[in-house]
Image 1: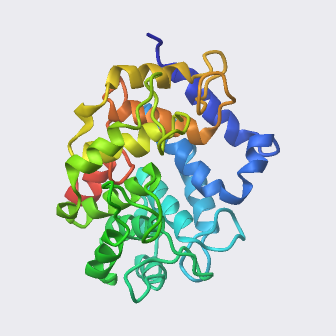
Image 2: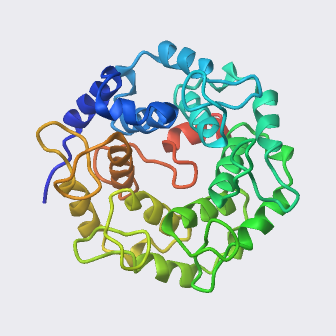
Length: 313
């Protein structure tokens, strides 16, 4: 069994942020705020968040805010609910949510809710259960769920449930592990898990484990480290995580590490990136891998950060 190359992963993440003109940096230029969330949360799980300049990060995040209250993926970019959640999550990591005008941000998110309870991602109106999760998670972290019609939001999510127990991006769309996480996470946050058929969904999710130990997002697809998060967190929320082989999954994630330069890839021997590094480390945290901080499966933030927000400790 391999070993987690924690120090190398920390160095890799810090190096990506410094290489502003490198390939990876240019590719994620338009979603740098998401990239910052992946990288910074990974550092926190590894206990190394103090390796970055907190004030510098916070001031950059606030520069990504649009006058509407929402955040763009980078300075001067259009606001979107996805980037707005990443901004809130990063500020939560640093215990800096108080720098936000909470009223303004929560109004921006609430205005994206449609009459049927669904959410658009931005002013252009694309609808997806990902945005339902993101809006609900954001408002919960801001203590402002009262800004939306939660009952309608839940009803819309439940309308996206399929006969196999899973959920799609809109009603009638096929079940997908990423969408399932979004729907199950949103239902967990709103106290609505009774709408989930836990045995049926648990069966569909545990069927995502392939021979190598890795997890895929849909039947007949290749395994991918990122599903270590999407599938695992859903299984934990519905209390069916004992239905998969955790040891084999740990080995699959460790096999996807670049043991020389740090970082984690989607599959063994592929190129590493920040996205898969985060989901690999977060997956290991969910698997209670030694030496990692615990992460909350619904809020995708370290448990101690979530406890501080909701329990004040």
